[in-house]
Amino acid sequence: MSLFFLISAVLISLSTSIGSNVHFVQAANPNYRDALAKSILFFQGQRSGKLSSQQITWRSNSALSDGRLANVDLTGGYYDGGDNVKFNFPMAFTTTMLSWGSLEYSKKMGSQLTNARTAIRWSANYLLKCARATPDRLYVGVGDPNVDHKCWERPEDMDTARTVYWVSPSNPGSDVAGETAAALAAASMVFRKVDPKYSKLLIRTAKKVFQFAIQYRGAYSDSLGSAVCPFYCSYSGYKDELVWGAAWLLRATNDVFYFNFLKSMGGDSPDIFSWDNKFVGAYVLLSRRAVLNNYDKKFNSYKQQAEQFMCRILPNSPSSSTQYTKGGLMFKLPQSNLQYVASITFLLTTYSKYMSATKHTFNCGNLVVTSSTLRNLAKRQVDYILGVNPLKMFYMVGYGLSYPKRIHHRGSSLPSLASHPSTIGCKAGFQSFYYSSNPNPNILVGAVVGGPN
Image (cartoon, rainbow, N blue to C red; front, top):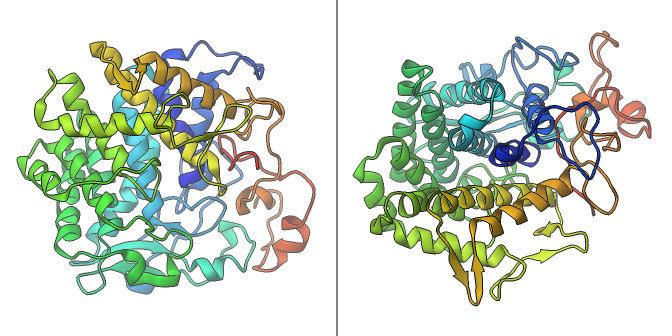
């Protein structure tokens, strides 16, 4: 999930460049409106539970008994990437980021704002269940990833054990709890005006989950071991999620408790932003008050940290620590690099938006950085994903002409129930479909793959 979704938030952030719809997409002229619509539609292909209003029609109901092994209802939410597992840590980050994009750029999203809210509500409903089902327990995932990886079957055919995982006072998970609190707090702001009752439930639950995160400290990786590692280990520790969660709760409530908590936490200076490391996301979020609110001095340190991060990203900065390919693509890590490109690009565009509002500039050594500096770099990254690259490859599935046809995704690679009503068992999908060289029978519109190797 963390890999595919991020382009939605980035395209939302580039919405000032979105023009009218065109039916034919050329690599040299990306159609952001079309890409935005597709990137939000993607979430329908990831849905778990009982489906409704489904435009991606090759998906059907699945995992309707999730949570039963713990005597709770944990149906709903999203499957992670191409698997049939629900990992709450990246799913909550997905929810936070899609909410952030919808908050920052709601006025420019047009009809896609409603679709984005639908995608946010689908995961928020599930996260609410996870947080409210059992006192002193936060459910953080469904499905054994090690067993799931031994099968290649449709979600609709799943016959593997739907193991339920949770954190508690004796087995803490401050990281996943902090991220869940951030997601619920951010989502509460999305629904504040359109569904006040739901918004209040979200923020009330966010506060409780965050209190759980800070009261019972520890990494969920230590508590759950091979159920989450190496898939979504909390490699950066849990401090960044506590900072991130507090930053979102501060924005949602303006309660001084969260500001004081932030001051007590300190920070770090990474050159990456992802589902695992949220420090710089929190800095950009908090810097909003310094840049927009008459240079509120209480938040000036976060502005400085956000700008130091930008200096580590910009290619011409003397303090840059970021590599770029010959085609101009940001390169951070060899595994699924585009997820890092997309998440960092969102921060570039969002900080650029803050700068533009007040004509703010800053320096990276002798390099003067304006809002256009950041925005132009962000646009080059998004355009690369949408076909403006040496291979003229569209890295978003279903967008343009030359896009990946055999993505690693169970539901996409196996025939739908409508075309193949009989069950495809755990092992049966490998030989006929996983190892096939044919294009996937179902197009997972809007998915963004890991990128060029």
